[in-house]
Length: 143
Image (cartoon, rainbow, N blue to C red):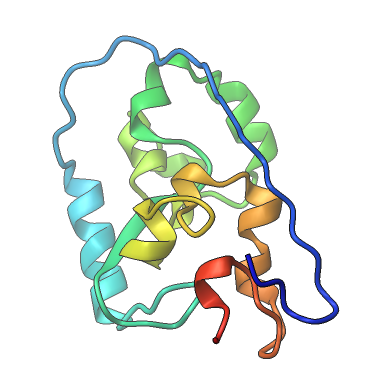
């Protein structure tokens, strides 16, 4: 690998074993449909690269698949800015504008080190804050 000047490479191999609570197949809630429409009206761009291409909606704090394993009292204490008066079922929080962010396909579900679903957050965040002249990953090295 050709490392850019004044940078050094790290290589991590990560294996993650976790359990999801049992859940029925995912269906799109009315809240999520409204949230996607809201982001569409805002002409959402990827929160990393500002692309408007293949923008998807990422669940930031809690994924739908985890909803039956969540302690909602903890969530309420950690997210006091959410309007809890509108909360009746898990989708009211999980699929809300508060718990979502627009990301392009690469930065959402793409492979590590770019996709948020496959990259530890402290490493992934660098893409959002990097200087224009900093090279984040080997696929960005100009030859």
